Length: 418
Ligand SMILES: Nc1ncnc2c1ncn2[C@@H]1O[C@H](COP(=O)(O)OP(=O)(O)O)[C@@H](O)[C@H]1O
Ligand SMILES: [Mg+2]
Image 1: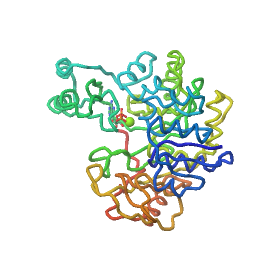
Image 2: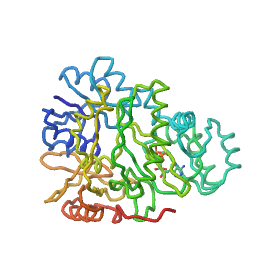
Image 3: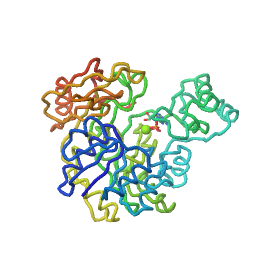
Image 4: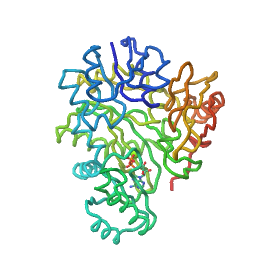
């Protein structure tokens, strides 16, 4: 088979690496890919970006299966465009992708189908939103309705802070339209878990749980990033949490997908919050998470291509998804200064490692690989215990280098539930 993977991050490197292991696969085109997919077995980077370019390429090269990494492509309807041409593509159609593309849509969906989530209100006018704030307790969570590259959620500690956030979103319009409409949501105090799952619209099969670390500094302090590391399984996802997740979140979601007649064959990612008063759904993502993918796929026992094909054929109910009974940890090496502006073009060296190195923000320049993003690379390791996986990932990180590499030192560390 000839595959096409859309995207250029660490997630896409991990997907490319995993699908390349399938005996069904002859070549994996990565559009545009990165410095990691450039050297990965069976993979070839191709510099195309728009839906039209990708569609032309898939037709011309007779691509057998396209896998979409980023939400942006899904939200603009790449799946609809490929399907209209009779091409096989894995991901939700544009209508279903609104579960991620619009926070108000997804919260209304959760409410309608009884998915347990934080209380919320939606506003399109600043005066009414500020009026509502006057009735709220703090902290409060303000979310831009549309896609905002992971920056559209602000937790405000006071009325003044929240009012300011609303002004930036709705009046200054810092997200170019995405924040004109906002969701104001009850603050939940707890620990988060990511549960990537696969659906064919008839069943949803959850993968192994995982946990990412979003803040830039140790101890979960400082501004949010795209994710500084992850572990799987998530140590907080015990049987009790998973049962609540299944009964009160997953099942209700599936019913909603069916009753809304969504064209949804792809990954559905549940971002959940585990609190002392119960487990809640924070959000849906309609694609794999990064860095979570980098710890979940190395533990997956299935041939990922076979699994995706089963989903596309509507045969997930006959399929078992299994994971190694081990732990995985990945640690991100980021550019100095990230998530604020950072230098790029710095040479990366990768020595001998026991696990795997995925490239997130690195590109090929001449003969070498140089930094090109905030999150540059991750070391991923497996262990019999969580601690062993953590130790190995950190040991491997000593063997990769670029100038000013920053990383968190506490990935995988377990805290008490607040
Ligand atoms: N109701 C909430 N209570 C507490 N924290 C929240 C809440 N909603 C979101 N967050 C925090 O903000 C982060 C981003 O919110 P999320 O809804 O996942 O949006 P996105 O990933 O699109 O930015 C979450 O991972 C979580 O840390
Ligand atoms: Mg999120």
